[in-house]
Amino acid sequence: MNYLDSYNEAKEILISAGVKEAGLDARLLLEYVCKTDHSALFVHPERELTEDEEESFKEMLLRRKNREPLAYILGFWEFMGLEFKVNRDVLIPEQDSEFLVEEALRYCEDGFRILDLCTGSGCIALSILNYTNETVAVCTDISDKALEIARENAKELGLSDRCEFIRTDLFPDNSCGRADIIVSNPPYIARSVIESLESEVKDYEPRIALDGDEDGLLFYRRIAERAGEFLFSSGYLFLEIGYDQADAVTDILQREGCYHEIEVVKDFSGNTRVVKACYY
Picture 1: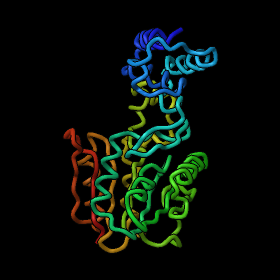
Picture 2: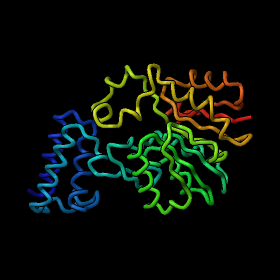
Picture 3: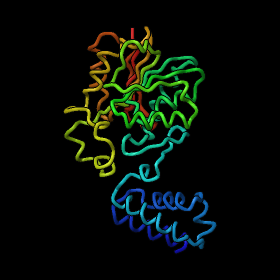
Picture 4: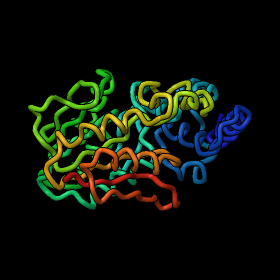
């Protein structure tokens, strides 16, 4: 089968399966299998796929038809202009989280120490390190498998000597010292909501990285309670939040009494995305 026919057939299969970006996903899978770029569909539509390419394409297409996320099928995903290895042990880096990185970068100076809680693939901390000089990071996660992926990403980006990965339930021990900035994209989905999410999320992404307890706010309470132990005076805390959590997270921080300059920051679409606070 040629390139154009393969693409058209795949697109129809994915449309029938209810995949939202059917055309885009079909093209990206085809490009990955055939090692081509986005122009191939227009410049060489008559290109014949080899038997191996057809077989690989069919296997990947079936996975996507079954609603496995494209990022897990490809094994990587782009975030902040960088490529990160991903699998089902980590959340897929989302464009929404780029706003968290960009906001943290506004306050991050060369030589700062970063603490990244619930690091997952490491995409947040590693992006900050990549776009700053002489910064270092401690990245924590409760999942050994997630930390393995994060370490691989650090190695691929040439950042292994500037970050440390620690398996722990949120915070490391106090021997790690204090940080200038704490960042986190913690689990924040209310448990009762998870089953209503798209199949790509609820059936494939790690539940432990999604579940924010009954109200989705458990990790914000835990972070607010202890972040001061790990921040220098006038250090900043940056938290990614759900679209409807701004008031609740702000209230959690205010009740601790040790944060000021608490601010809800909207992303470029006008959605509340980040809560920023400065530690006294």
